[in-house]
Image (cartoon, rainbow, N blue to C red; front, top):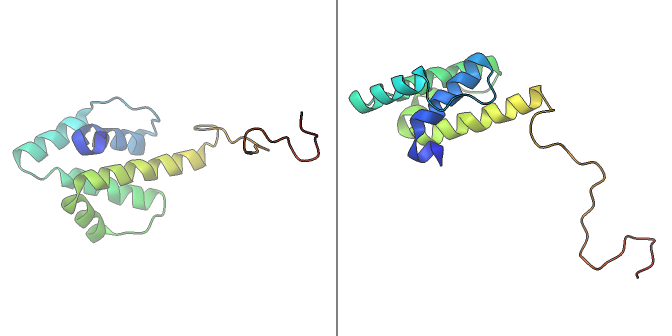
Length: 122
């Protein structure tokens, strides 16, 4: 939702997560304000997204170059901001597995009313 209705906030949060490694960045930042100013004033807010996209590709060894980053950021800024956020979620979760949803070992799902195998039904 943030990516579609308030992309400036998501772009600012992505930048803070990428540059400072923050897991819960503030909603508004200097990068957010810069994106707003560039986008509303000149229509070139995508340049900041392109810079972050190139940095994330380099930092985490992801595929893509400057041309791809420019095209993604220019053609659909909202989609690119959401994709960057999801990629940061993925790489940060892999770097710190204690963050996020804890994996439940030996979790079994079965229809209600059935006893586990090997147990008599009541």
